[in-house]
Image (cartoon, rainbow, N blue to C red):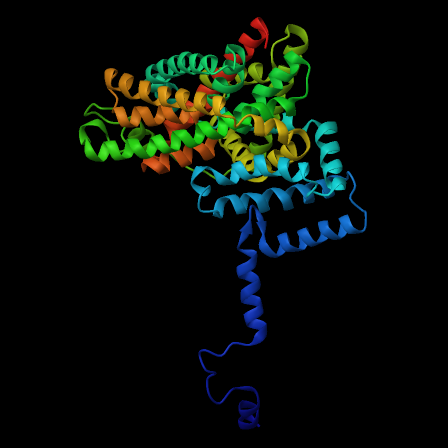
Length: 457
């Protein structure tokens, strides 16, 4: 019996190594597909989601229900983002963000997005004011999650080149824009300031929210006017970063190869990297950081009603003050970092897609790429980087690194910083770039809204 059982149930010879059953092959392909994401969505799930959105459109079942809205936004936003990341000519200049911000406006203009889908996401976008919540999470999360030592000491190190570059870039950009017939107000508020506002989500959108409140007009129209300056400014900074890298190779005395301080002592980032830890983030930490962001946003809303101060400005000022006064504990900082990362990964592209498709007129976008604004943008960014180069040398910083950090002030947010520093092979400067983008951009937005409130637009 034992011999029969052995011969019946156990193979007499091992199966060939290369032989695989169809079920095993299907399982392996499925696992590979589930580990390949379109944006943040696993490939098989994305295919199913796209098919369901198409079926709902054909059967006239597109509604304003939250799940339907999320499905529509994810399908279009992440598909465009993946396309932008893979196209050879645009992937190096933040192509994903460019595509998600520009293309939906064109698709909606041409009627290539189903009208029912546009109506559904537009109604949700307008009724819930979800963009304001997204901005609160991004701004407060970005400030609260930064290392306080790097924030304070890093800002002190780059303040001189950043401030001098910003002021002279404003002067030169305004002069060029005025000379080309744009008018000084339009040049300042709709060309030069958006370049240095910190990108789209953290800069152009809060800026135009403030402009819309001052002018009592549609924010989408205003955003369409400033977006070309943001995109061209980012591209100009990337090209200049490549030239700075070549300059550093030819003149080694001008660069620290990623080290900002020109002295022989320890670099600020050396000590910061040595002390860095990555403890696990809990759900309570994330929830606490999220509610803190909501609280600061509501304080901004109240300040707008009581004192007529722009809500994004008040929210940003309170977040910075809380950080500087040691009001952000380590657990809250970790939670804020998760909130910030989650918003950038999961919410940024859907928000940009929805805003572009429903609020941003294509005709207005096209006007922003006229020769006069383009010349003004290039002059502004070149001045910003050149002044950063020379002032850095005067204050004891490596000129190439100082110019690169100053140049990120004209970058398109975090994606722009990555593109600029990658072009120069100086990714180590990312903490300083984040200060220039977030804090420098926040200061720019704050001063611009206060000025716009005082002199008008």
